[in-house]
Image 1 (cartoon, rainbow, N blue to C red):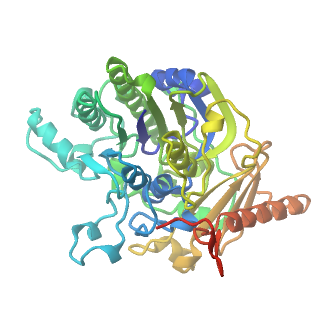
Image 2 (cartoon, helix red, strand yellow):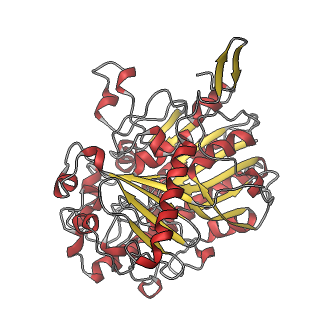
Image 3 (cartoon, rainbow, N blue to C red):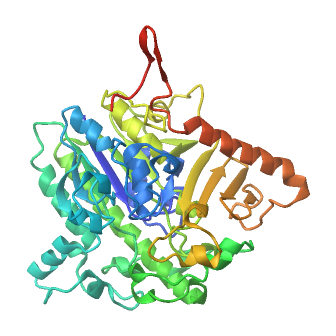
Length: 492
């Protein structure tokens, strides 16, 4: 069996046509869902990109791996999915990036990896790098006759909604797909494991024609209004947009008017259509090779995007759209046309893949294999809530923490989502609580309502139990006795 793990960057979990989103033009993913398993309530564990992918590649919650910001090193003792697969004789390959910050204790002080958060998760053989600088893609554009080689930011410096200056077949998404398909054509006599990591629809929101305006404005839902007052939200709305937002960089989120937000949303959904199209090319390539039915295909995203909801952009927030992401799985022996409603998480992907390949699951894993759910079975026990975390410390520019009078270790946020309620816990700020049935967009805080005091207490108790249950345990399951070591532990 082969394994193909595809991630898109910043794809909201509600942005699929098969989920009834009128703005989502995703025919290939919708078809894949009909032919495989769609997990409707799948969530990443952390934001932004580095922490989100650290959980995906280690099977660890953020409070265990502690790579909590872009640039926070991932402790080298944490084994990655690629390392475990490589140790079993496979050759896991990577197209794109993993944003894994290297442990500075393991490399010389002049190692160039210490000057970037865009390292590669240990265990992967990198076949095509596509970090933020996108050097390989820029070389490609120059070779295709687009003129003098510019920086990636120069290429993206365009008015919002204008088509990109490159053709769709030369986009960054098409470029990575082409490289993967060229490699795939040579994989006829051996099983393989590949991770394909698309940068889009991550900002800057610039799309080539026809994708830049392929979604009519009338189909795009307006952003959700914010009604909740909280000191963190008030401070967050004072944030200036960074360079990755292209022509919007330097502006305050709160100053963006409705037409600008709707134009931004239109390009975002156009980029989703482009990624969907390129995933379709990959599925066609697997079919032409006769490999589709022998391949475990997993399509997901590292995290989501607010798109103006609650007056915010990006993913460095606590709201569900930043953590709810698509998950579609198709593979040998799995159900077809199944929709799973249970809560699933990124930490489940590592044990799922390992079990599918017949490999042992390390105690390190905080998640649980999805294979029973993917086969249509009903597990005797499954999680009744899902959790995610965000840490807003910033050692380079600590303006948000300073604005709130907080130390770096005061900057944690943890969220527990149950079928009826959501609880948002801040390390050093007041909590929030929402009735997600009566208030699906999390607009009215009920944490101080006397009638919900018991609910808030139970949610906080549930979060504490979650932390206790999944705290570091790689040696807690064994004991040294006069007869020797009993129990189980991860060997390294």
